[in-house]
Length: 287
Image (tube, rainbow, N blue to C red; front, side):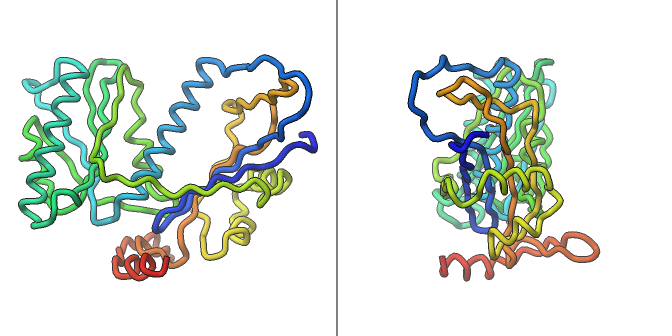
């Protein structure tokens, strides 16, 4: 890499987690710009899929807690939607019913109900719906509100990397159509950008040694590293606009959680899922 190279650090911070993305950037150079080179269709598709997972994961981290549910409704044969628009209508109606029922049975303001729904039609023509919703209704009650078939609902289980497994499951199918919907009160996680905190050499070291979590934790006091996802070599698409050359460098994602997080404890026997909302409230007042 040339001496114009820097590493850009994107930090997305929620109550209990921070997701850091490192990528190479180049300062603008004088001279004639080369024609822009676009990624191939396959590379762009992989990039779009990764960005969708990242966006969904951050939104879940910023809006939901272990008191909330991952919900997966299914269809009986006689209730299948006719197309993606019919599926969208069913999801919209379900969302409204959930909101009304939740407010009535919990005694809370309907404006506090939160939900993110991902619905799609797979390549074999089968509809799929995955959702994350505010807790307060039993799985059986949720199924009654759904009304088109069976439904499974499980409390969210956060680990060191947040809910990466869940978001990957939400978006795992090869699809014909996919859309998102949800309540309007969902917040976006805070984003901070720095270009000089981590050098290109340090970024490459982190990328090439993902097992060395201690080195990263020294860069982020008060945070523990859950997982480091190094560069996927077949997904690098970064063109230097001044030379037309591919900019090689570290494209790394780091998942961190607070040392005193309120969602779980790591023990010798594994993860102890013991949600401590009082700890979360105390920290919120300090922020």
